[in-house]
Image 1 (cartoon, one colour):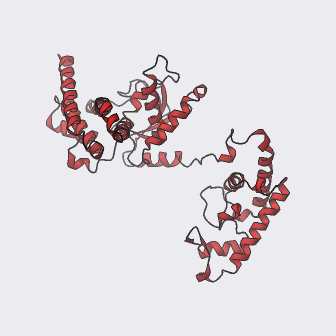
Image 2: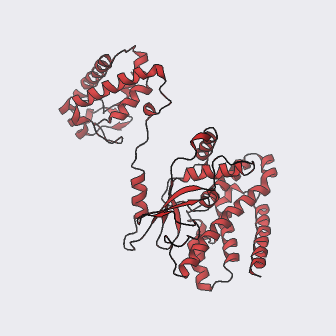
Image 3: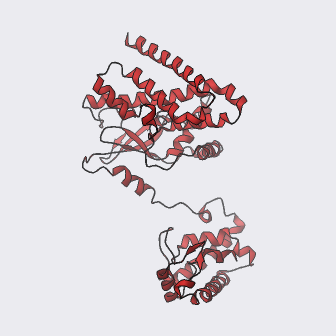
Length: 397
């Protein structure tokens, strides 16, 4: 009886969604956010019919299944919902495509909203029963725990499941074009599989959110859609490795922020260090750059910093190496060895020095990229006679 009631509820929900979609066809992209919120509300109202009034209101608030007014400030979304919105926006650019794909778009948006609500209701039901996932019990969404380190758990879940999990509200904006590009590139590199791991945050209320890997989840969602129409899935998208960081200290609520910050402290690999960028013929140039950059950093140790985001007047050696490589300095000036490159860099430093030594007057300090160079930065550059960190344009001159 319960299965029959659930089927009827979902069927009536589908019909309602279609009517809603037809009604909003004209301005679908203008009201996509409210449209998804209305789908969540319909799903939650249908699936929580058996709960008490108090518990039902709690679920609606927890899952973001809210009315139009509250939807104006609702920021959380799952990747599945974000992908559905992006597909609708792309289709709306062509009236013909929109007509042909209208039903599919509505169904995709409905499925994303429904799946998210169903998952979060499972978590809420677990909290009502005072059951918390551990090494011996399966998580209602993520399934069995492969290993519990205490501070985090390891699970293997499907790409479909990951697409239903909301993105942490302080994450960077999801860019569908980036996910599409990643999916396209990944389709050309089947032999590498799916490197990396998706990081999730689990709040004290049991709710999950993606704190690292939202664009990879977007990529996985697109690949799942692509390969579901084919006989073979080259990536085994039903088995994706995830790590879950659970909030255990109720007095400290910044775990998600701390984990996100620590993960993103890792600095990106520069173009000069990418394996396939430098061909065999260019390996000699790379050795020249590395040697010259190392020599200049040893000559002015106080002016070089480990962070790639160091402030003026400091320089990061990897940023310097990358600028020398991407600017084509060696080819343009026919430089053949590291000593010649080092002399060229020193000449540029002297030229900048002549410019800045005449700028000790605070009102006469040259600008960098339209911004005023701070007096403290200029003072340190003058003290150590190193000016390369005050202006990055020298490498292109």
